[in-house]
Image 1: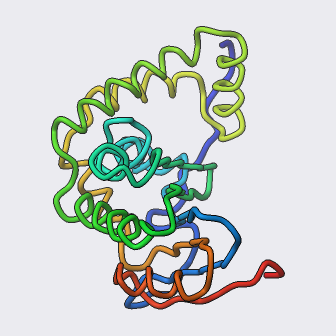
Image 2 (image 1 turned 180 degrees about the horizontal axis):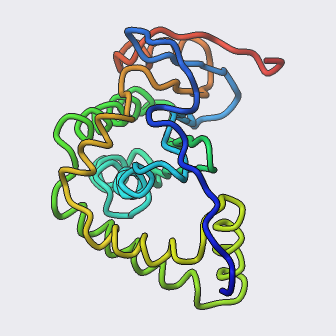
Length: 231
């Protein structure tokens, strides 16, 4: 890669994005809409791409909702049949990062799904993932890292991301080594640093205001602020 060198500077340690007030309960924003299904979207802060927590948090997100065998997906889809699946996304640049956790359930299962999501965040924060979960996440991430350079389009995207964040191609080798050596304690520490089960904002949609109010109350995830389509 010639003279392509790293120019990135890591941001200051600690949470960088979504400076949400430290409150005692999860904030739920509810939007009544027509339809028999309810959508759930949890959003929270996450490490930047240059943070030392970036790769451990990536492993954590993989466990949370980027594998079919994730505990939350198995709970909602396989054990109870309340959802077709759970999706977790982690978006990060050189300064900030955000976590997105999404699912869609029948209106009658909204309360159960909300509680299951918060309980899973609590488990990962307090207990950390199991060794089996770490191994599964590690294997899929290493495979995807290798595949990212196999095709022209994926390789160009990978290199463009490195360039835009001031990193050199050597970063890929470093990431491979760090992922290969990732251990349970490291991921647990990052979960305790970043996950906020009782504070992360949650947006939900449902058929009517009363149903949403009842579901949130039964799930015990905090008070509700109702929105209108104009908001």
